[in-house]
Length: 235
Image (tube, rainbow, N blue to C red):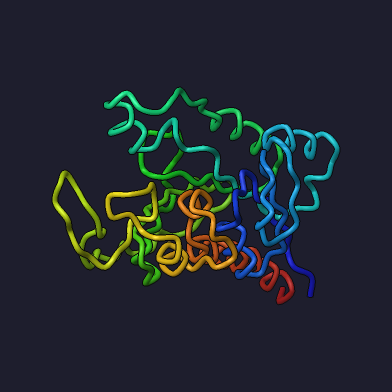
C-alpha cells in the first residue's frame, strides 16, 4: 500500500519529519541550509519560495499534508523575555502571516508549529514531553489548517527541569534541551530525552521537536482520513 507524502518545511535535522515517517508518511524536507543528517529526501531551498513554486507548478498535488516549523525567535518566550530584556540577540522577521497565506493557497491540510510565546498561531493542539513519557517538557503549539485533532490531556509534570536558575541548582526528571552551560543537557542526554539518534549536532538538537509529537499528529491525521473512505466503501 502506498504511503501518503508529507512536505516538511523549515525541516532542520528532521525531528518533525521522523515522527510523521513513523506514523506512516513518506517525507520530503526543505530547508535554507544543507542538512546532511536529515534522514529523508531533502531539497535545499527557501521554504516560502519553494512552496510558492510547488503551488504554481502543480507539484503540490503530490502531497497529502504540509508540516511547517518556521523560525520562532520573533515570537518565542525566551527571545521576548530574557534575551530581549538583556539586549541580546537580533531582530527577527515574522514569517507566519505570509506562510499561512501560501498554505491556504495550497488547498492542502497543514500544520504550523511554534513554542510558547506570542507568535501569531492558533493553539489548536499543545503537546508536552510528559504526555509521551519523555525526558524533556518542551511545550509546543500546533495550528491545524483544514483538519482537526482533539487536545490530549496535559499530564502533570513530575518535577523541575534540571539545571541552574538564578544561581540555584535544581534537580529534576527533565533535561534542558536548549542553549549551553548552566546545567543544560549534554548532546547524549538530549538525544535520549527526545528520541533522536541520527544527529549529534547540538544546534540541531536544541531546535528539534521530539518525533513523538508529530507521530501522534500524523497518526491522528491518517486515522481521520481513513474513516470517511471506510464509510464510503460500506455505503
